[in-house]
Image (cartoon, rainbow, N blue to C red):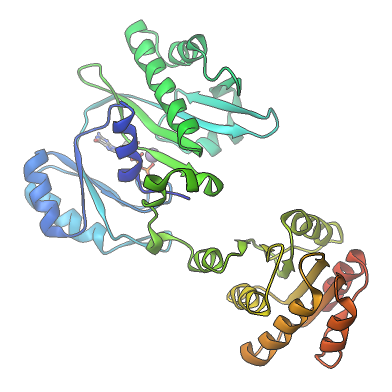
Length: 376
Ligand code: GDP
Ligand code: MN
């Protein structure tokens, strides 16, 4: 789950990371009041969950109240990367003397949490990682010991020569690490971490992504979810108790079990195809769930073929078959369906689907190959 900058900054504040004085607003009237309260110059920042808002014109420095009003009108009406701006953050303008990057993610290769720092702030870190990876300083935190003081200091000393700033940064890195672990985040990022005219360190921007599987432990975080800003299809999938992630390919996959879903995607790729999605209908499934899965899958206009790969255990193949039949009747599905249904009640399933016009396969390999043939 992603949250907005203003929400991430609320969390930063709770953990003692310095942020600018600011206020979130949903209309121009609120912006005018906020700009009076905070004072001018102030910065008007679009609250959308995508990077590069600055470049897209979603961040403007207003010199006075009139400009604040004008920019608020402009930004509140715009779309950034296809997402309409519904809120802006009015933020105290900071006189920046230095910008840096500080972030924490999980390094899956090292199986550890990694703290990353870069002297170039305000730029996209993915781009730095691609073009100039040596510019990123990394320290790995031991999962049991956490981020040690000397690690945090090393990060600070990498970014700043002045010991006072370096130790200030070390303390911020420790707080960031606390947020990351306490709240089950998958990413926390300050970009840019700036130094103002008086030498203070300030988190000018904030980003936190949370691990959905940890949200049940953090009701206050879960309550921050902004439904309007999420992919409508992924949201619906969650409400239907389905795990769905849209991808860029054209073979729609419907599978039971996350492991089998991954294996199915691998197989599609192995034979030269591109999966359109990850979709796990779960361990036990009703016909209704299968119908919902197909409905969600077909909202993606790139899907040209549908590949069912079901290994019936607790999941009963006849339930899945009935779901397919129901969906075919109600959803007007034009795409060909390849079905590999094996395990519990597979004979019943075949009986149900006998006249449904599907292409059947007995093995995964065969199923993937047939789906690819149907693309051509
Ligand atoms: P992003 O483009 O979505 O990552 O948004 P940021 O919050 O990181 O802002 C982008 C850039 O706008 C920063 O790197 C700064 O250069 C600039 N900026 C944002 N707030 C201020 C501010 O208070 N003062 C000044 N001078 N620049 C700011
Ligand atoms: Mn930023």
